[in-house]
Image 1 (spheres, rainbow, N blue to C red):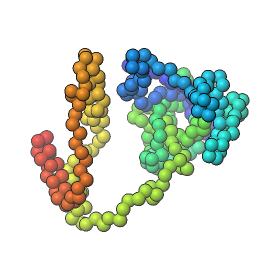
Image 2: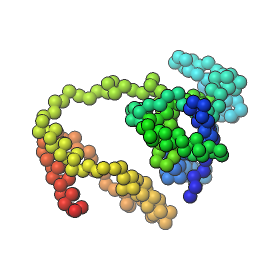
Image 3: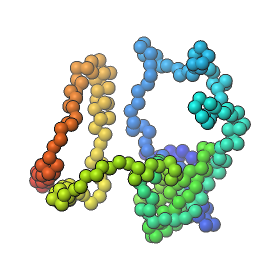
Image 4: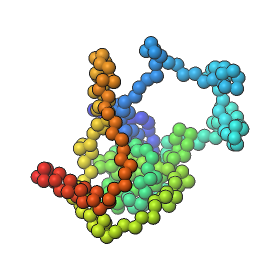
Length: 267
């Protein structure tokens, strides 16, 4: 099945211009969702109420947007003023610099889109793709769309280009701000942990080996519900999480033996 483009843009680096189409890297049809209904099974309609005005329903044409600049104090904006605040959508992806392909920490990655060549863009598109593969560098760019200015990373994704939407630096929590304890690791513990890692290591990411088992279970239960079965009859019993203090060396040794047993079964 051919993917459907969700929009168009243009990549520029130097004097080169590359018209591209944007495709979502995620498949929205792969997720499950439940609708809010009445007890009779009717779809519900969302309404907004004003709690300071006797919970009166506010129609959409009477709603305004505001910014909370202090506790419960807002400055209101007209639609015309909001349009002034928004960044003009140029649909230009302007590459400012190229960085080593692994230079951007994973925490900066927010959302991914695939890029395909638009009409007349085949040759420069393929040129950029191969040049980045050859230099092992990806392009940092700015992308103005949907009223915002995004920081993006143009990268190769096999046979096509990818655009990774990135967080800005001030949007992230610094790792040094995360408490990580003051434990001291013994050499023998490190040796055992290293053995476990080596025992279950593979040379490549194999996504086809992993499936959303919870989704599969829920889908199976939904089918039973459609067939008229009471789901409380098949509800799994919850296993409480262990909170007891255990011997780390003993756990490591058992883990290594389990990994070795698993290796024997596979071979």
